[in-house]
View 1 (cartoon, rainbow, N blue to C red):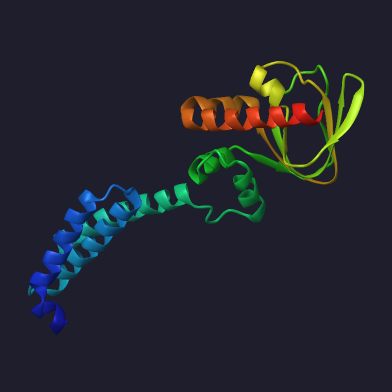
View 2 (view 1 turned 60 degrees about the vertical axis):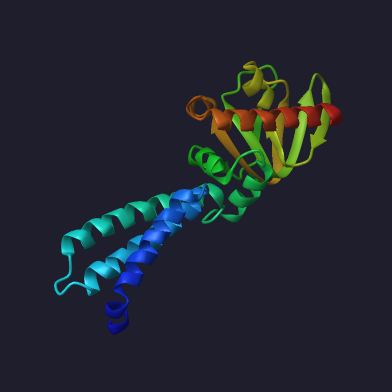
Length: 214
């Protein structure tokens, strides 16, 4: 405490300098971290230096710090895969046109399943978009049968072109797949144009790859 009292001016100058540097930094995460440190220095000054702590100033500094910490955590979540499960991280890696933050928005409306199932029926309506992470993918299309490796979208033609399914697709073995309801996903796209661009880029690549192997 004696050190703090003897260096009160240093605390204020350091905190103020950090604020100045924060306003010059272009990276939002670094800006938030610098402001958070500066706020803590001001709180230390308000508490230790005056004969009676400046509780009003401390209270509002804590409010400012809490708000800043909340935004800092959100920025971290936007940029990292922290707190994602192993399957979610693997899926995020496949969705490489999206930032982790955009992918998290996709996850909020995603549904996971591990059952063997027929995902689409040829020439029938499809109200979901699937992505198969693991399992055997068997396709029947216009009388021909072939298999696809896991790591593909199913129902992407119907979703992308807004028409009936182009093939009957079944997943078996030990499947692990995720799907999105069409209406929910389209609403998400409307609210987040960047997600729409990133998702459609993935779908275009996926369809091109399937054309090459089918």
